[in-house]
Amino acid sequence: MASAARRAPAASSSPVSSAGPGPGAGAVSGSTAEEAWYDDAAGPVVRPYAVTRGRTRPAGNLDLVTLMITTGKGARTGRSLPPEQREILRLCHSPHSVAEAAANAGLPLGTTRVLLGDLVTDGLVTAWEPPTTAPTEKILRRVLVGLRAL
Image: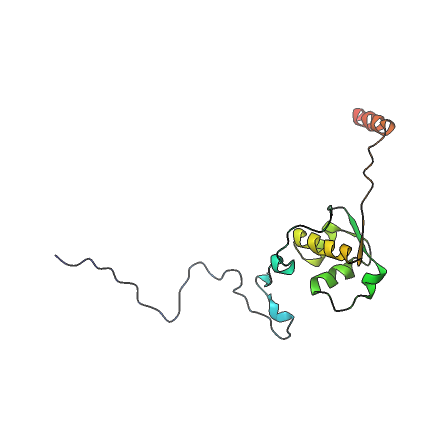
């Protein structure tokens, strides 16, 4: 009776994959130090939790519609901040909601909320929340009349 020993496939000098290139398989731009951390196919190489130093909750309550605007102190802040926070400060020279700042900075919403919380704590950005007063009975009646008219 012949031995049923299995052999491992012979090692090849060039692995073959039918799946094709995956994330991160693109060319890495590297002409400058800042570009070395960007992979053309995968996007930023630095993960969001690294940008926030592992934090997942902002300092304070920042709703998606909270408007953010750079303060005078924030406008004078130079290169002492990480690039993500500098970009958020630049965007918030004109009022932006938290959601708009995240979208325009190209950052995940959770990461942006944590970074904005830090900027608010440091006095570099001011947060303005719309008033949360309940509508009056008069307004509710007008809405009801409008809905019935539909």
